[in-house]
Each structure stands twice: as structure tokens, then as C-alpha cells.
Image 1 (cartoon, rainbow, N blue to C red):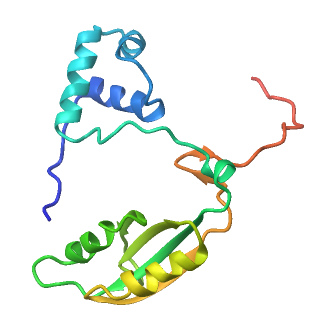
Image 2 (image 1 turned 135 degrees about the horizontal axis):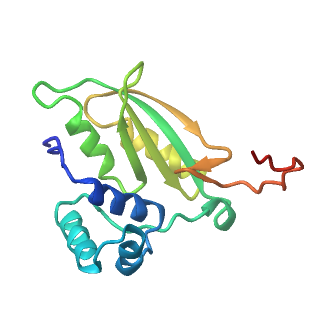
Length: 171
């Protein structure tokens, strides 16, 4: 695996990316109006971002806790023996190729990788850890944390909030 090359864009490109990160459904015409630039220019930026894999996909963030309240999520800390010349990349790749895995992060600290796993039952997630993850070459140990409740994810509050009793303050 090779590290990504840094990608430079200008202020307009950054502004387009910020808008799309907040609203994946934002139409190029709406973005053009917000930024006061031609729609064709927005489309050109977006096409380039897609080609360069800066925009990987367009995604709707769904509060699955309300729809699938029986799905099991786990965060697994993984201690790894890095391989000469490739470090943690080969183990990370072996892990992220499993369909049960939704995210893999390289960490500093006591553990090397943080793996997020999703499954239909606690037993299936546990079997994934014991039969697939723990048996990967160079995996020394794992610690599994099952998520009990999500309060906030990707910047979105997932729990219902009562109306504030405080009066708004204006200056």
C-alpha cells in the first residue's frame, strides 16, 4: 500500500467540498449560487475531485439507531506486530477487506489499530473477532468494546433533545 499524495486545491475547491460534506444532495446550481461562481466551474471542480478520489462517494447519514435498534456495533483495539518494510499496512488491509468491518484506523498509544465492526448479533460479532480477526498473522491481541448507545456521530446528534428551557440571549 502506498500513502496518498497530498492534494492541493484552492479556496473555491475547499468551499465546494465543505458544502458537499454538509449536504451531499447539494446541486451544482445551488453551490454556484452560494459561492457566486458559474455552475460549469462547480461541475468542473466536482468532476476533478471525483477523478482524483477526493470525493469517494455521496452519502446520506442515517440514524440507524432508530431504524435498526437491534444491530450490534463494536470497537476493537488491535495490537499488531508490524512487518518490516510495510509496517501496519498489510495487517490493516487484511482487516478492512472483511465485510463486517466498517472502519479501520491506525492509532498511537497502547494499541495499533482501531477496528469498527457491525453485525446482526453479539454472538456473530464475537465469532468474527475470535475466528477471523484474532487469527490474522501478526495480530497479537484484541480488546473488544461493544457500543451500548450512540449519542453523536459524524457531527450529528442522534438522541432526541428536549426543548431548551433557557431564553435565547441576544446582544
